[in-house]
Image 1: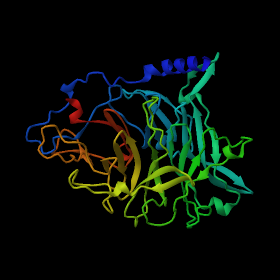
Image 2: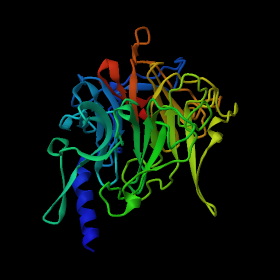
Image 3: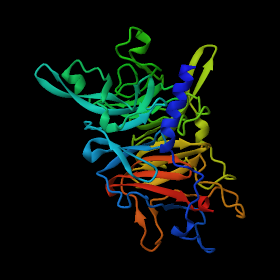
Image 4: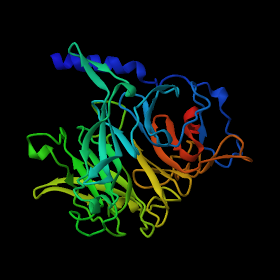
Length: 409
């Protein structure tokens, strides 16, 4: 009973932070879609109410939090920024050295991949680390929310680097995502290339629920490696992974997806397919992770462009999911993409459209003035919380909030 009371208090504590999706939008602030508009459904920018200037120093990875707010890495300031649904900055973290990717567990812990320095003999070297910021404290037996600035980042895990040669492999944790049970997955890259996952710098690491490097239970002290090919151009090969996402995403709900499936992006120039989906199956022979090639299917009755087209991407920097959709930003193409979970590009057409195939809403240019459009420049983060799309437009120093014109009606 006490746990139930604490859960209710935590929900009550976080509820004021959640923007109401039922709130009626003022449609007069948006451009109308003309009858002869060649793109009847498209994304348009929605200015932030609290911070119209929206200026940040190289924002990169961005996530929707389970507390109804948003977190992103401000690379140029070596910190994490927490903003609410109006764009108001709630808090910023203490300095974090070279932050790369972030995620949040359902019990309100922020996980960040970053870089630390250690001394091996007389040599100072860099070491890949995973940090944790616990945003819920217990006061008087009840949970209390803490701001980022109140929390000292704690090292959860360090990449083993017992020698200078191993440190020079330049290992980095490039992506991180959480599952429904607060276990999490991390992508690892580096200079050592091998078909043997035990030797290669490339790996997908699974950290179990309750992971603790000081735990007396050996099963909770070290991550396990997902048994995938890690060196080469094949579909499902975890070679040079740039981002990873699971299907467990906000908002907080008992219905959060309980699958252990995940998707990741890769940046090997010669790899024709740079977006991969891995299915998790429990079989009589044990647990199995296997590449799901159905994502590569192309049905011309459903759409005109597809995720499974070879060489579709150059450098996909981030991937996220929401409902039946997959969102990707490509930092080299300066472009945002949206696909269905079946790999069809776009969204359903308007109800009165004769062509029932998906309408493509991917873009690199946007804005009201089509003669002089705004443009993405090195976008490196993307997330979605109905009905808004959020993009870290890194070189332009801003977080874009966008909405489909079809969601304004």
